[in-house]
Amino acid sequence: MISKKVEEAINLQIKNEEHSSRIYMAMASWCETNGYRGAADFLYKQSDEERMHMLKFIKFLNDRGGYSVLASLEVPASQYKSLREIFDHVLSHEEFITASINQLYEVSLNEKDYTTGNFLQWYINEQIEEESTVHGILDQMKLLGDDKAGLFHIDKELGAMAAAKVIDVLA
Ligand code: FEO
Figure 1: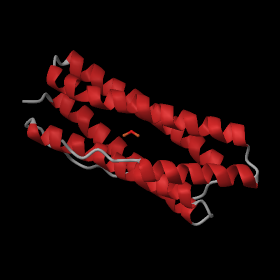
Figure 2 (figure 1 turned 180 degrees about the horizontal axis):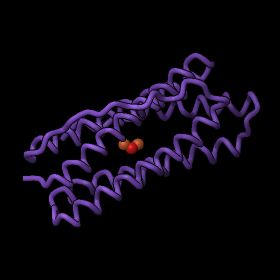
Figure 3 (figure 1 turned 180 degrees about the vertical axis):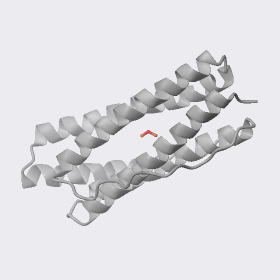
Figure 4 (figure 1 turned 45 degrees about the vertical axis):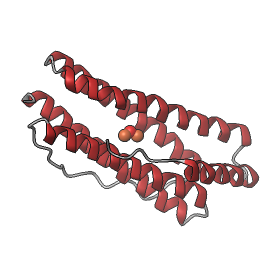
């Protein structure tokens, strides 16, 4: 049986993952209507991936005798100044998610819930990968510049990354 503290902390993370999914969906919608089809594909996929992260937590918590509940969410921003602004925001958001996963990990260790700690290893590794991907995108943006040609290339690159992205299925 899972402790109340761990249950609450996982439910908070379920909220954070669902919120991430909505933030990236809003960004994808902006990209799609502003000529950035590749970035839109990338962010729609990222949104799906966040939903998968949420679902994985929901099933884990319910399987362990806890109860997953959904929370109300803030409406994500719908206006952005540029593609660069979007990816700066993605990076700071992922840093926030990394911190919240670490916080959850700490709760599980304090509660001596090593099963949850073990389960969280997957998310800890996933965060390393996600932050590194966004750093790579921002580096390319800096390198290629934000003129029309640079943005065209970045958008193409993001489209190729989206096409190559395989979303892990639930274990
Ligand atoms: Fe589920 Fe992008 O962290």
